[in-house]
Length: 112
Length: 117
Image (cartoon, rainbow over the protein chains, first blue to last red):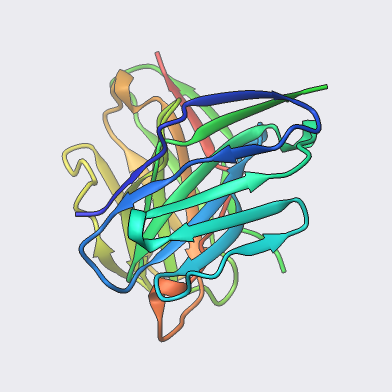
């Protein structure tokens, strides 16, 4: 069975602070994909990143960066210099074949 | 390209009534998903179609929920009769055909918010 755990239910930061969202997953498969999605107040899930289980390179995209560590089954997401527009719920998800399993999400509130 | 279209955006019904949600995926996307998202939780897969065939409906409460994708394009999700616990956002998503289905990115619609009174 697959499982994704996002232990942080809600995080509040002040603008320009850095923030890391944690994601821990469980799977017995050796081939799988990990995703992060953003859900702003409008409700639509927006794709942020995909990483396959054989690629442990960290990735940076602007203010966003992701740290994938297979040894600890973690795929953490860091926002540098947070902005008010980053306020949203962020979901980590695990995909095996075509089935995508989500964590419960972390609500990020960035105040000015 | 146009995104995943869903309607209605909002629906309020009383328990025991029926409701239907419609989804039109991105053109050319063979796989269509219906997810249920209860407030404060992550989306949970209800049913997955590959073209017009069901791939996974293991978490669909079949005594009250039904879904179809007759022509392999748009899809309808129905709830009859609705219960209070069905209050949620129903998200439709689609993904393109690809040999490595695990790599496919799901594109989600804006969702249909159901309130059951």
